[in-house]
Every structure is written in structure tokens, then in C-alpha cells.
Length: 446
Ligand code: HGY
Ligand code: MN
Ligand code: MN
Image (tube, rainbow, N blue to C red; front, top):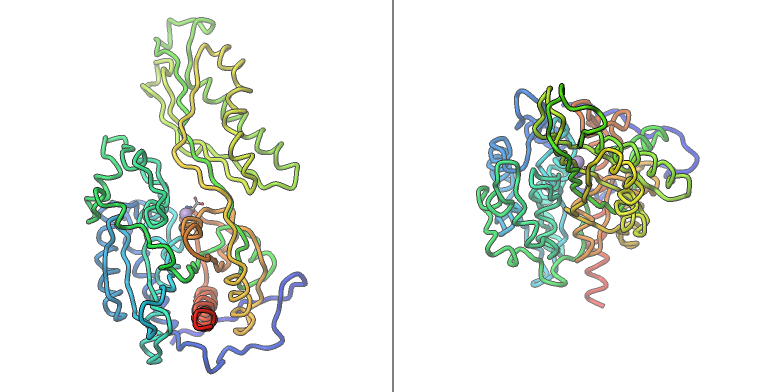
């Protein structure tokens, strides 16, 4: 039997309960070993050459989905795959027609960065369902455990595919977007069992979700630095993702004088540098602004050819809608002179734009109360990472629970959280859902 060290260390700014009510009678009987074993098992569905990688629509993803189906079934959940490829497990409540309490996250990953990102929320929600079975409890509301399809940006450039479909924000242009091999997002969805031609059926009926709560690693350093076990998310930053294409002219690298070149990569470099400076300048205010070029494709990508074209991703994140709206246009306007000097042109195409999203105050309060009940020190904080919760917030009261990750690292092979931290987060998730079940039933009955 694993023993789990406690995690809370002294800190002034957080709320710290006087004593742990760890075994409060109403606490669900979580099984830490089952929880950790599932987390490890799911993480091992990875590209063997590049742990921990399980890209949406990949063979590893499909194998993981088959395993998740079995685990959902073993937890007594009624299974369905909606038209958008979301895997949904449902446990009925005892109030007929009551809206569902939904919890989950995503099982797809970025390259080399998914040992906890996403799967923690899926496995923790599954553990809540198991614990309800073990305790013989039935809530007022149904519980739905969801593995949302493709939260991470797919090779077509679209993120939060399944949760957008449930929120009704997955646009036709996104479904028609293609990857470098020419496969559309719709074709990829169909390949894993979805029905893109009926995508509208994946959209949740208004009022069908009582609340959505997601457990996730913080993916940043704050909780660890402040010695806190739990983060209560107040809002999720907005993200504007674009594809920038810089067009020049391929030429011989040896015979083309510097002053006659149309070097697309030189132009792209100027844009990347300017984006970095612009984000740092905007951060001088109290706004949160980050800008990243994470993907770049050079054509023809040959040592001895002047680059003729560069296609690169740029994402801007901020809690200020104005920044999200203007950053890219102002960046390209500011780079116009450099583009002229490089004798190239630059254009941007929006892939996705998600506005900053606030968590629901009632869910925030339930998370804080749950942390307190279990004796876990917590603090309110924003999320600099995007999540499916930002989409679900459009159709239901939303909240997120964070746990620390080692050195704040994420989206890398070093991503790690301790068993005790995983257990603490799952305890708070379970207690939050339990509180919402009682509170929302009370308000619906009133
Ligand atoms: O990119 C993000 O913020 C999230 O990890 N998908
Ligand atoms: Mn991620
Ligand atoms: Mn994630």
C-alpha cells in the first residue's frame, strides 16, 4: 500500500484550514492506488521513441481510447462516443431529468509532454465515479466523465475540438482545415469514430450541464513556490492562434547577391523578434501577455536555397480581449518596413480565437470549501494555459482545480506531480462535485 506524504507547507497568502477533516464522514472513499495505477497506465500509451506523446488521432491515442472504454465500463459508466469524438461515461442520479455534473479533461498530448497534462483530469473524474460505486452513493444529478477529443492544437491547427463541439463553437472552417498530409479535421474525427456530418448533435442542450469541474496540473511554478496543494482557478486567459505566412522567392544561395534576395526566413525572423519584444512591452502593465512562435516550416528547406516561403504558428495569450484583438495586426503593421527591406510579404490567418473566461463564483467557492474541508492549503489564481473548461464555460458554470507540478514544468518530458498531490486534487474534485450536487439540488428544488 503506497503511503502518500502530505504536501502543504507554510504560506501567508493562502487559506489554510486549522485542521484536516480528511476523513470527514461525507468524503468519498477514494482509492489512491487505483488512481495512481490508472494514471501510470494511461501515460504509457505513448510513442515509444518520444515519451510522453499521444497525439490526437494517432495509433497511441486510439489504443488509449480502447483502454479508457474498458476502464469507464469497469466503473459502471454507460458509455457513448458523441459525433465530435468525445468519450462520455454517464452514471445516473436519482432525480429524473436533472442536468449532469460533468468532469473530465483530455487524453491527447503535445509532443513529449503529456504524462499528467489532461489525463489527470480524466482519471480523477473516473476515480470519483468508482468511489461513488464503492460507497454505494447516488447523487441527485447524473455524473458524466468525459475525455474530450483533441484539446491540444491538432496538426490542422485547431485546439479543444471536442469541447468546442459541445459548446457549439466548432466552425465549419475548422472541420475543413487540413494537416500537412491533406487530411481534414473532419476526416480525422471520422477516423476515430466520430460523425462530423452530424457534429451539431454533439452540442449540449441548453441547461443540460449543471456544472463542469476540471482537475489539471497547474503547468506553472506558483503553487510549488508558495507551498500550496491546491489552486482555485478564477479565470482562463484568452488565446488567439494564427498562421503567419511569409512569402519571398526561392533562389540559389550561392549566386544571389544579398541585396537581390527575397529571403522569407529573414522576414520571419524579424516578425518573431518583434512579437517577443511586443509581448514583453505589453507586460509592463498589469496585463498578462505572452506570445509564442512554436511551429515553423521553411520551404524548400534546403541548405543552399534562399527560403522562398515560411509558414509559422503564432499564439498570443492574454486576459485582455483588446490585446487578443489587436496584437497580430499591430505586429504586422510594425514589421512592414522590415518586410520591405527583406523584399517579402507577410499575412496572418486566424486559426482559433478564444476569449478570456471567468470561472463561476459558486464553483470557485465550492472548490475553496472542499480544499478547506480536506485540510489542503489553496489560493485563487488565473490559468495561463488553455483548457476545455474555457469552452464548457460557454454553456455551464465552470471551475478548475489545480495541483502543483515539479518546478512548474509542463509540455515536456520532465512533467511530474507526486502521488500525494494527485490524491489531494482528486479529493478536492470529488468534494467539490459532492457540494455542487447538494447545493444545486437544493436550489432546483426551491
Ligand atoms: O496550450 C495550452 O495552454 C494547453 O496546454 N493546451
Ligand atoms: Mn497542454
Ligand atoms: Mn491540458
